[in-house]
Length: 375
Image 1 (cartoon, rainbow, N blue to C red):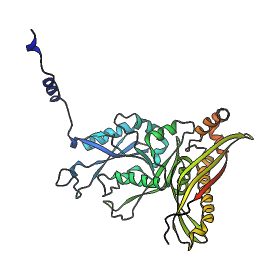
Image 2 (image 1 turned 45 degrees about the vertical axis):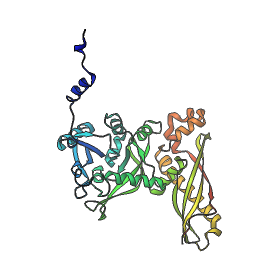
Image 3 (image 1 turned 180 degrees about the vertical axis):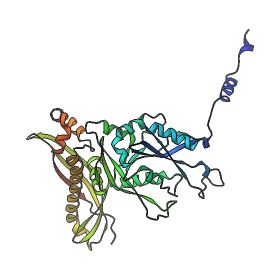
Image 4 (image 1 turned 90 degrees about the horizontal axis):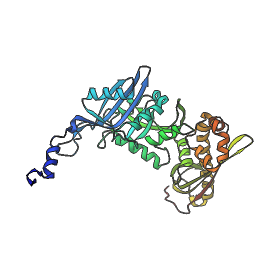
């Protein structure tokens, strides 16, 4: 009989769990946002993490203390800079909760390598938003918003709201990495700028503005886009996207909202040039109007909105595809899906053919009979 040798399983589990190593919350830096800057001396990483000292009081969050801590580390590589951050903060760095990665203007030239590291990092977050700073990433991360549980939440909300209005196309880490690995090797990232505006919503009065977008290639920022250009990208890429715009009808402002957008792109090859037919269709409603009788001007407003849609799409294509030979809208996928033979003819010199491509942009806008209208 060996009954006396049987040890209950729960006793073994309890004994082993008591020997596990663990780290207290105040020994970890749970990153909310990461900034990456580069110069001739290497890489600078700026980390913004949730301040655990603001918890544990009579309320869940102690609003009298800063809700985020910002630390900086330098090194020859991103990895060594992160090690410097860990050393200076005295905490283990966890990147799985990072909602935003900001690249400084000078770091955009190494964007592909930086994204590869972020994607392969064992604690990284492949769905983190990616953005570019007009100057340095440190400028953006040193702005601490006083609203929300963590400062970065405000920046994430800014990007999401801009997307809802059709003024920006937020890009997440894995999408940017895929686009830079595609034949067109380019992506569009939101462009952020630090402003000394005296904002009451931040700890030191500075704030962050979303000024448009940046067409990024492996060589760096190839072109800058205005918010209107970014809406052209949204209309081109995102079926179902909304777009907020104002047109001038008979000298009066008419604010409209497009929704239910659908874009059809038909590539073909003729006269040794790559050609695209681009048609954008959408429903549209008047949100506010200064016209005395908006109903009587529905057809005129419809034509104006259709023209503005075409203008925004053409301008985006001119700045990104024609001027930079970039393909942030994924046109190469459209070509391969529509005509493998055309792709075979142009794939070896995609950038050259894109720079000389011809775009025939049309629109089909349907105005609602009734909308939400105010004087």
